[in-house]
Structure formats: structure tokens, C-alpha cells
Amino acid sequence: MAKKHYQSVVVLTGAGISAESGIRTFRASDGLWEDHHIEDVASPEGFARDPDRVHRFYNQRRDQLLSQSIEPNPAHFSLADFELKFSENFSRDFSRDLSRDLSKSYTLITQNIDDLHERAGSSSPLHMHGELLKIRCSQSGRIFECRDNTTPLSKCPCCGMSGNLRPHVVWFGEMPLYMNEIYQALNSCDLFIAIGTSGNVYPAAGFFETAKMAGAHTVELNLEPSINGSQFAEQHYGPASEVIPHYVKALLAG
Figure (cartoon, one colour):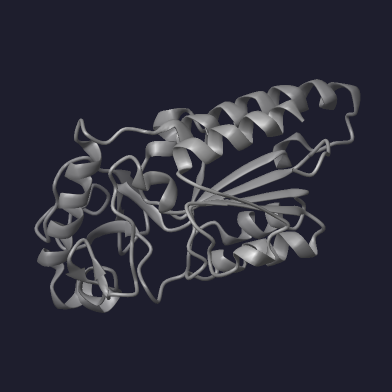
């Protein structure tokens, strides 16, 4: 581990961090997501063809996420603990140097649509691929909390019309969310950590390159090396619930 007093940390998490909580990882290689064809449930075209199927699919995912069997694991809690302690330390330093921008100290980006980071205590993660527990009006773009099942007949809270609600999830062919905030954080960070990512899905797969160009120390924490694993300055491999708490403890100590 590089020994340095980091001032701006960016963490990217992928499906691997939630796998140990019982949420199946997305596998593009076999063309299936939870035994469904990807193009049927994760594309605007699939939604246009069969909105009832898509609503049912995300209802099932939502029910699974809200079940008692799905809980944050030690990896989620470790990141939340790191955020808290890092922010506390940064606040003390900031009070002695008012020229530093506290708002850029820690950014958590996640490709996951679950809420396990929030449940573990992380504040305001950037869900670049949307959130399962939210629904969106396709006409106004307004976003609403959603914990109940929806159908094509569900009425939109803002316009009162049926057929306008869709999952607040980024599908293939759509632009990920928060890209301006993400690249601002990447271009100013001095430590970038990728956790549980495959390196297959862009633009997230290229985030480490942006951070590296900004001069950041890059770290991969994963079950196994990703496609780009060898290009990170530092790598640690094993189950997320073991590797991440160990790394975070060493990082805070250092």
C-alpha cells in the first residue's frame, strides 16, 4: 500500500461487493440476467415491446432486495466506516487549512442498483446505473421512492397517467447518471479504489485510467483480477467481506 496522506478519495463499487449479500451478479457473457434475456428486461426496446414483463422483473428484484435475507455485508460496513473516519480526519485538517475543498474529499460511485451502501451507513453514493427502489416518470423525468409492485396500469404521482412510469434504472443504450460529478471527482482524486468490478462495462471500466491520468494511486480489490487488473498500481484479491475490511483498516492506520 502506498504510504500517503490522501486528500481526495474515489471508490467505485460493482456487483462483486453485493454478491456476498445474496444479490446475483450481472453476467453479460451468457446474455442472461436472473435467467432473463438482457435485451428483454434491460433495454428501452424491451420495455416498449413488453412493459408488463419489465415491471414484473423489477418487482421481483425489488421484493428480493427488501426481503429479510438481503443485508449489507462487512464490505459495505467497512466503506461506511472509512467514509466517516476519513471525513472526520479531513475536517480536522480542513479547519487548519481553509483553502482545501471539503466537498471533494470522498466520493462513492456504485454501479449497483441496490441500497446496501445506504443501509450500511454510506452517505449519498452516486448510483450511476440508477436505483431499484425508485421509479421515474418517462414524461417529466421526476423520480419517486418505490417499494411496492408496479404495472403498466400504475398511475404516475406527478401526472396521474397510466403507462408513464418506468424503473429508475439505466438500461443498455442509455447514458449513466451523475457523469459530470463523477468525472469531476476522478480528475481531482489522489486515490482511486475499484471494488468488485469486472472491467467489462464502460464507462466505469475506464474510470481508473482517468484517475491515473490525474495522478491518483489506483487500487483494485476484487475476488479475482479484472480485465484491467494488471494496470492498477496495487491489487488485493479475495472475498469482498475479507479483503475490503482488511484494506480499509490498513488504509486508516497508514
